[in-house]
Amino acid sequence: MSDATLHAVNQDPDDFAVQIADQIESFIVAVTEVAKGDEPDSTVPFLLLEFSQLMLAGGRLGAHEDILPEERYEPDLGPEPDVDDLRERFAVILEPIDVYSEVFDPYEPRKAPVASRISDDIADVVTDLRHGLAHYRAGRTTEALWWWQFSYFSNWGSTASAALRALQSLVAHVRLDQPLPALDGLDTDQALQEDPEDLLAEEAGQVMAAEIAAPLGLRGRR
Image 1 (cartoon, rainbow, N blue to C red):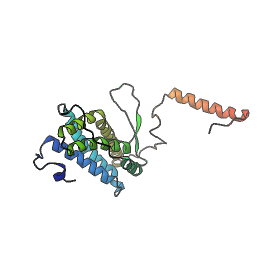
Image 2: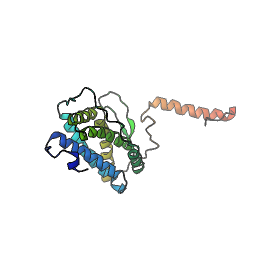
Image 3: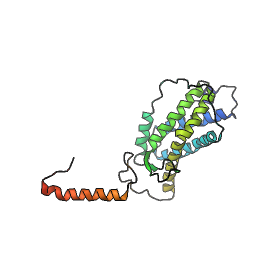
Image 4: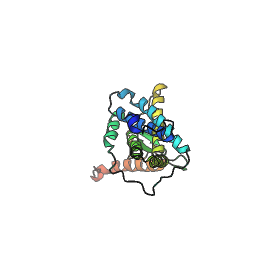
């Protein structure tokens, strides 16, 4: 979509809202193109660039004074556009580097890392950005800026920054010739760090069950 269709002709291109909307529109268009998979070998570098540029918009929103909506209740936008296709395309393109570990809040003490997916992050961020863009296209500029700023703090900012760190790490491993260790079955349904004593107890129980199952004529659970 061109600037002419996204913005009114009388809007100043140096206006804060116009610049933020341009950066967000550019991100959505770019990742949608990358998801087509035409250049799979360039997917990670492209995403690194796009997330880096998006975080500039997020930083500007975060540093801006609080933006307050003009209306008490958010106008109804109707059903949200489906992002499942985008998520699934990136899950295929990025496999097996899609899953990474992330500490949700670095200021929470003793917070264990959790498993995340870059493909989920992209879909999540695009959903938030599209929501604000719908307000912007409808002429509700303040509503759009409020939503982008609020969701930057509450969701897409931390999600995008986590994905950016993962992408930067991937590129660094390649450029520094440092092969990634085997992911060893890592998935988002399992904890990344468990108590060592619990692991030892579980392993001991498995050994004991294996040793006594045969003599007792028992079979393991399938």
